[in-house]
Image (cartoon, rainbow, N blue to C red):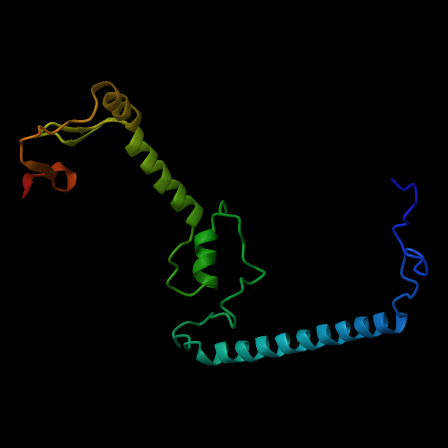
Length: 177
């Protein structure tokens, strides 16, 4: 066994690189990067300008019957009020925005739809009083299925499905062969 030491770095190489990167190369790279960034900015700005002009040229003309048509329909004018509690809100919308005004209160409309869905899912109601068809809350229906289980078809019986029309009116039996 030898007790001779073997250094990790051979003689003549001091364990690190003796030459540094040149500052001139770094400065040239940064200048090139700045020039490339400016060039990209101007190319993108020119492209958007071209697309903007093309979009305006292809936009359908506003009806001559509309007297207060905004020049740019993509941006909301600064005088647009968002206070829906104002008494003149509907009148204001009709004056400032040309017809048709499809949604004047989209949040309120969506809330009404969600409340109606929740009421449908969570209340008892008759679907058809004459036939005795009722609607039960979804939680109660899940409890009943958990207690009773799903209906099981006998092995020798033909496959049939009971289909009811909208609102429970009328029914038909489909038999699969």
